[in-house]
Amino acid sequence: MLKKKISKIKAIVAELGFSRSIVIILNYIFSKNNGYIKYIKKIIIDENKEIIEKYKKEKTEDFRIIEKKIWFFWWQGKNNFPEIVKVCYNNLKKNIPSDYEVVLIDKDNYMNYVQLPEIIISKLNDNKITLTHFSDLLRQELLCKIGGMWIDSTVFCPNSISSDFLDKKEFWSIKLGSERINKKSYGQVISGCKFAGFILKNNINSVTMRFVRECNFNYWYNHNYLIEYFIQILIMQIGYELIPTIKNEIDNYEVSNINLYKLNDIMNEKFDLNIYNELKSNCNFFKLTWKTKYIKYKDNCSTFYNYIVQDNKE
Image (cartoon, rainbow, N blue to C red; front, side):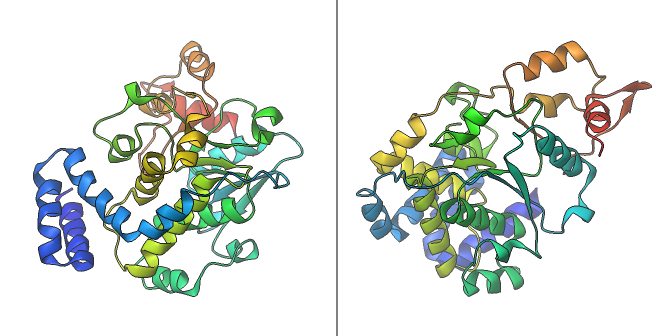
């Protein structure tokens, strides 16, 4: 944790200079989330004033033919999936309508779908942009230029996903509602749980995705280091606050998937079918992680993790 904080402070100073950084760093070290986020948000707004003014005049465009594609990203390719990613991939493929396609995007094929600016590729190769934040840029480009739905590689879908939902022409993300904010999570504090970067649907040419894409690319055109991990979410929140059409697009979809994080909390517990069925009764997407060590047995009993592994073998 300390190492991450030091690394972040160095990045802030490198990008903004010491005198401009001092207040931000003090807030980052000593204040609660809101103080630090306020200063980072001001920087992003100041650097994107012209883009913000431009998008205040933009409207949602409904001219796109629905691309029946669900984008699934793993840079190293299918042969290098961790087990939980393999489970989520297999599960997703079996739960989508037959006329939809799960498109696995990796380092060898992403350029078959979109062409990213050379400066972005160069900064990725120089390790200035991490794979995590490269995937943010990639999803924005795919959703703006082609459309469809982006689902992160550790999102588990316990139920069939309906054509009615997938075909609906709207911008959509998961909305949990402000009462479910985990105050220890920067991402949730920033977004107010109105949207999530790891699952996005853009069957229309939404102002939200176009704005987020343009501001995020603009950041990397002008910076070499990231000053806020949740920059995609922060840009979306700025759009929500300042651009009426974006606010309308986000307010238009309802609270859903309120058990989004609850399966992850019990993955290493003894499996209970009643609990599992209750969780998925009102939740089509569970957010898991490949960074946590899940176990398959506890006290010689199968865990929730083992159940979904066994249920989603190829």
